[in-house]
Image 1 (tube, rainbow, N blue to C red):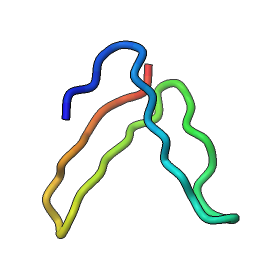
Image 2: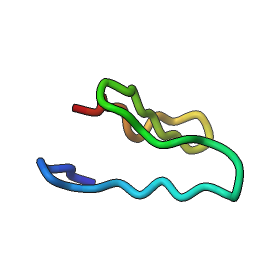
Image 3: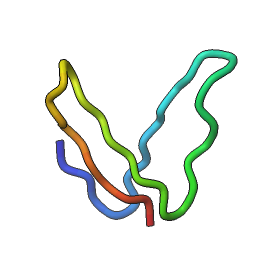
Length: 42
């Protein structure tokens, strides 16, 4: 997956759970322990 400037990531959550993302947040995504995404919000 390629992310380019201006792309948006929708993180959908249940009614309660994670809050919104902010500038400088560090986001990671993995499946079965394999790191697939690792980036910092700008």
